[in-house]
Image (tube, rainbow, N blue to C red; front, side):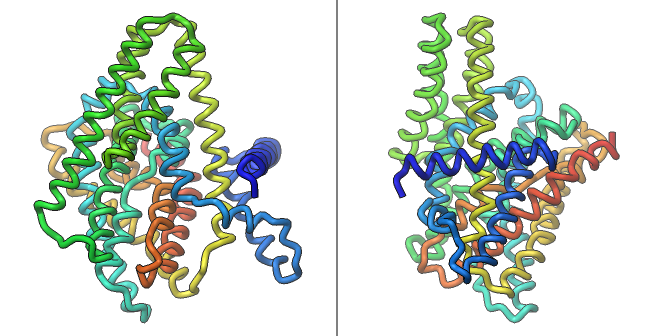
Length: 408
């Protein structure tokens, strides 16, 4: 199918489902769109044997979800999210965010892998531990797109919202590095060594931070020299696309580069390089772009069920893995909070809100779909990931507000 036709169909369906949700269902927009797409997918699966598929399955199978999200959409979504995060708030919570996004992700990866390994054994599924580690790595990072979308209406205390937001903005970059390291070991491209892991981490993460600072500062200088909101919006678009493309070319962490650049423009740029008129137009532009891309992303997540190769046993393991992922997050956060509580204040119900507020989303699905066919249990891992993501978005996304209100 021609690219323009595919985009036209996706945007049209996203608009239709948004209307249906807003008019009749009244769920949070992203969750409503995803659930309508899932119901439509199940309907198409039921009528497919009768030759009644209108071509949606063919459309979805022709879309590379991993490339679409990780290369196409993610940079815009991360920049839009980082643009409105106060740097002072992040710096005030820098220790917690750094601990959650690094040690927390690694600890969650190994806890998840170990529990899934034994759970699979009890169910009669033979999974190599390295493949369990792959699943742990791709499912442990919380998804900034899902988290930011839900937190907007959840009403969390400011201190907890900053911690969850900050963690989600940074831990996907860390999570991707952990995932790539384990994938290299699983495919035999590299041996496990502290030196290799440290080099990859330094290159990806430190390089991403440096690139974000350099490109963000250059964009800031350009913004400070003009007072024309059309030009300034275009400069931010160039910053996002150019920085991410450069990060990919240099094998640096694109997500981290974009987050750093977004924080720089959203704080220093907004304060010293923009007029009130520019700020208003810039905010409106990025908010609309964010909402539009979110709608298309969650539409795609709902439709991905059409092309999954589902095994009943992996489906059941995926349901169990949802609980395992929560246990792993609870355990890793509890350890961090125990270390920090003597020195740092935490709001009431911090552990439960941080645990339940850590949603998984499109990034986990994209990483799972990027697994090579040489991984013998690829389809099973994709199925498990999809089940966990759906349960996370629906169960956690629809109830996090109630949990917050119960504690506050």
